[in-house]
Image 1 (cartoon, rainbow, N blue to C red):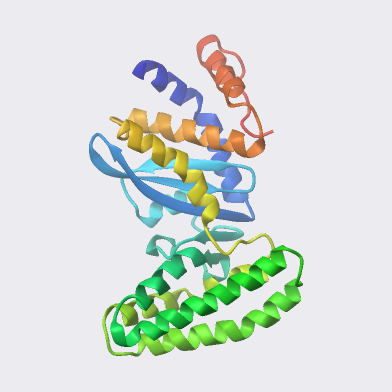
Image 2: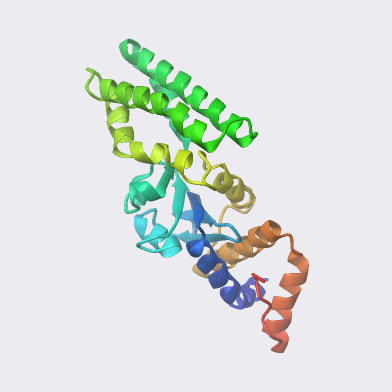
Amino acid sequence: ISNIEGRMAKGLAGAHAEAKASVAASATKHLDETTWRESNALAWLWTAVGEDATVFVIRDTRSSSVATELIGEHPSGVVVSDRYSGYSFINLDQRQVCLAHLMRDFRRMAEGEKDLRWIGQRLLGLTDALFRLWHQHQAGKISRANLKRWSRPIRAQVAQLLDQGARSRGYETPSMCRGILKTEPAIWTFIHREGVEPTNNVAERAVRPAVIHRKTSLGSQSDRGSRFVERMQTVSATLKQTGRSISKFIRGVAEAVLGGAPEPRLLQ
């Protein structure tokens, strides 16, 4: 079985490259990463979701080198992600920081240092108000112009609270506020750019089947095994995204590997 997987991994190399190129060229892409195990050592499973494809890679590092492998050193379009420093090479005007992750940070503040809890509580209230505006825009109840106009006072209050928190006496809350201020412009990209969402739910949903696979298989036992997993996950997610048959495509790859038939194209 392992040998068959190795041959299939080679047969899927072209499809994997197709998906990677498609994601890099997308106007909007969502990135996320989670832990993996390879030969019982810590590794990382990365995912990048574009408009027409989803790509996975397994690497032994969480450094920005993997992000640049997926989207390039000078990525085009907008990248949606969390605030992880591995994405700091991306220009802030090309980033959207996940608001769901920010809300978790604000909730930590609201439950943290007693004298500074009010900062987290107010930030949570402002974020709720921002989401209400976004949902109204998504439902067609307010225009993009009104979304921009009505979000301005929210942004001003958020910036003021983060600045107050950063200059306050304490440890966790001031540190978190200073960290958030570093990427503050990227909180608001979705207000001004069409096709950009305020959360990274797209990538988190995409990576979930791979996480389940990790839990049931305990990871991979070799580099070859990791290549098979990342390529199969890429093909499965991309075909599901484009509404095509997974079994038909895999059979086509097997026929190419075993009998020399032309390799099927992942993206049509």
